[in-house]
Length: 65
Image (cartoon, rainbow, N blue to C red; front, side, top):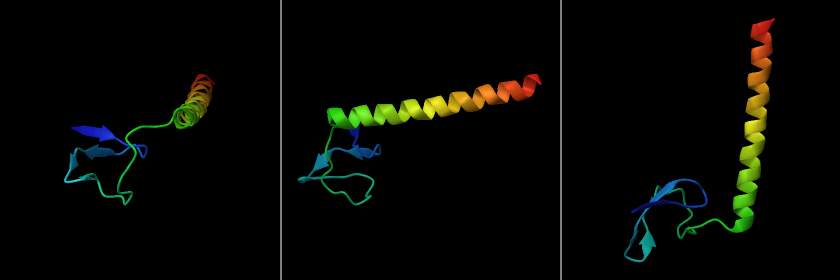
């Protein structure tokens, strides 16, 4: 079973009392995001999308001129 922790990296199932994952040093990772963390993550993603849309629109204008 593979899951993602709050760091966004995949982890594997629990074995022998600890989680076997990609080894970035956080040991016993939470298995879920809090509601506040989800909101912040979505706000950050929305901002990235706005910036990407702006860049695309600017590129379209350059191509049209």
